[in-house]
Amino acid sequence: MGLILNLETATTNCSVSLAKNGSVIAIKEHNAPNYSHSEQLHLFIQDCLKDAGCQMQDLDAVAVSKGPGSYTGLRIGVSAAKGLCFALGIPLISIATLKSMALQSKNIIQDLVIPVLDARRMEVYSCVYDVDLNEIRETRAEIIEENSFTDYLSGKKVHIVGSGAEKIQNTLNHENLSFDTRMVPSAREMAVLSHTKYEQGKFEDVAYFEPYYLKDFILQKAKK
Image (cartoon, rainbow, N blue to C red):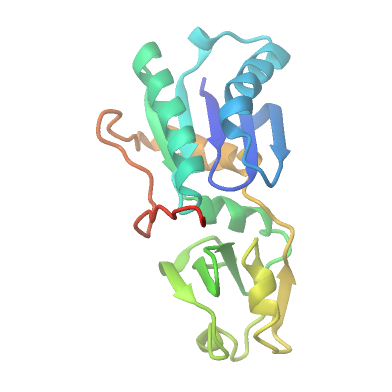
C-alpha cells in the first residue's frame, strides 16, 4: 500500500492531500493572497489524517511540490516534508509544480498545455507539455512579449493556465490560444504523480534536497 501525504505550497494556495494508491482520500486547501502557509500547513496535515482515520506512523512517503514558485512558500513546504521524513524514516518525493498544474487540464487539452506562474513584472515561470503530459520544452523563467510561444501555435491548440496567464492574455492574441487565469497548483493532482514515483522508487535525498527556485531570491528593502 502507498499512503502518501502531498504538500503544495509553491503559490498562494496552501494545499494538503492524503492519497492511498494514487487516489485522494482527504484534502484540505485554502487559497489566500497573504500566504498563510506557516499558520495553516501543519493544521491541514492534521485535518487530513484525522478525516482519513490515519496516523502519522501510517504514512509510507511524503511528497512536496518542488517549484518553481514562491521562495518562502517552497521553503515552508520543503522544510515540513523533510522534517516528517526524517522523523518517520520514510522517503521524500518531489513533484514538479508546473506538471501538476498541467494535469489539471488533461481532460481539455487538444494539443499542448502551458502552465505559467507569475514571476513579477512581465516575467513568468513556464513549461510546455503535450496531451500525454510529456515535457516538450523545459521549465524557464521568461519575459512575456508579443512573440512568446509563437513556435507552438502553428496548427496547434494551446491552453495556457495559471497565475501568469492574464499577462499573456493581455499581450498575445491568437485564435489557437485559450486561457484559464484562475488555476492554482493543488495537492489533489499531486496524488497520481507521487504514487507513480513511489512505485518507481524515485526518491529524493532528504538531507540534501532543495526546492527548484529557478531564479535567485532577491530580498527587497522596504521603502522609507
